[in-house]
Length: 201
Image (tube, rainbow, N blue to C red; front, side, top):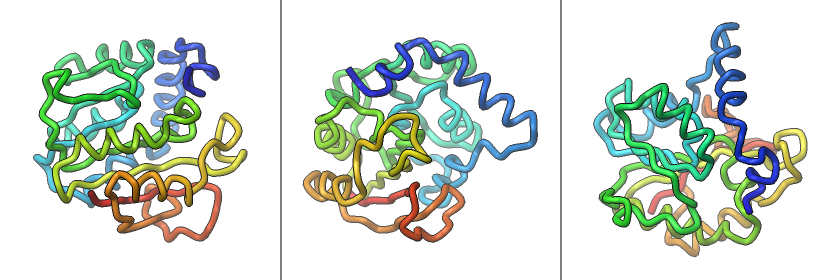
């Protein structure tokens, strides 16, 4: 069982969506992840939203002209995504066993985005497998961008992965680190408790 399932019981989709809707109504910017992605690949690029949740990031990218596919394990989150954007492709799958071709999807993505603390919320011990599966979904030269908390102040669960561990999994999967930032606004990383990392296959 993933740390996310342990935390939520797989029933948090509506609550999660409501929280971000309230932030948007209050004037908060809820599209930082999508904006970050647009600086990495041009409109029209194929994007895999790995751990897409309720679809907030992917729906915005699709609105901006990207060819997107969303994958998540949580049925309650996917139900919200499908309700909000029924025309977009949403798939329920465990990232540790994700096989695009098995779902009828071409494994030639230009970008994989894993926002929303995906890696710290995976089932313990599956981080290397997930990194390898995401690498296999990318075309040569494709990018993986992942943003996640590294300490208790930035996570809803105890920290589950360090940056050296994550970089090690990425290196084993054939990735090279090309950039690291402290926020989705691309502020320089300063060793703090949250990091956005960009790796190239």
